[in-house]
Length: 337
Image (cartoon, rainbow, N blue to C red; front, top):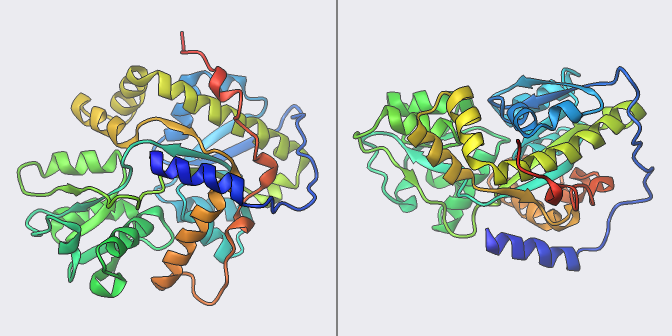
């Protein structure tokens, strides 16, 4: 985490501002404005509600759950949502497919994040042991990038494994059933899976040093950003999202009890492990600073065969009008009463 933060700060100093002349973001949200947020496992909805930020929003903001970044992208493309909460790979998929979405917010988590997780009896104890194994892959997701980064760290590539294309929601059952030997699981899916196969030799492998970007994004439809009312509502939501993360960082016990245990139905022990896996989520130090990190992910994925036939520039994936959002207000949040 410290290494990534240093890279981001250095990039802030080295990267020129690439945003062209931009129209200022509207900030007045007219009555009756609404937004739908493409969420995952009630995470963002709970974040805003428990922090008290939901009731402060100027627009009528509702949430719809989708199990993967590509599915949240499809919801936005279909007009069923205007904003999505995703990892670092879905914006690349959106860019490649000309989906018309841009990143408007970014946080960096302190924990280990997504981990390669093994099936009972797989014989996998290290990242090197992935060679020749059946590994669950979901194209266009952060989980795919985690596999490729970890393979690269031990001198392997996609050709050294047997990729098995599955939906993210299918990974855990495929591991239990022996259809695959390993897959990258996010939390709380990983805690639930490992609890279900306890004592059978399944494990989560640590990421290789320097391989996890730990980035979480909000991205928004350009069509929504072109609408003054929805653009203002999105701006208001992004600032609330940053403040809500700051609240979560200072309210560990409430988040564990009310979201992880009550909403997600995890045991207390598993919920504690999920918290450790995620850690604090802090505002990334500037959208421009993320560009070289994002470009490295693009290059890695394309070298692995994803997103062929196009030159993708990471700076095209961001709306730099949001560059200063969350700088002061996130730090000013007080613990919930």
